[in-house]
Length: 81
Image 1: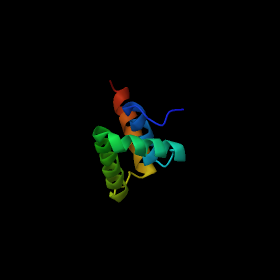
Image 2: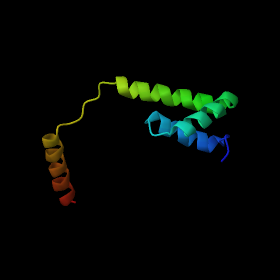
Image 3: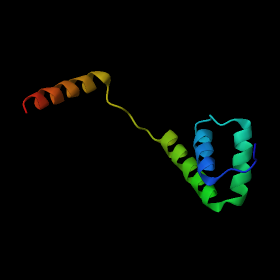
């Protein structure tokens, strides 16, 4: 088992880490890789900014009853064609 990751593996571990799914050993290997790879450090920083922006957003979704009504209208309109 190697301590060094390829960039594509580092990106995958970075994504897993973003969702708190990375193991301790994966985090260690990722941090070693990030110490040497500026491209992956930038990728990791962008990932963190994206996660923070999504967590801090005030996005609301359409209520289920409105979604259902919209879907029924869409199906009705599609049936006309």
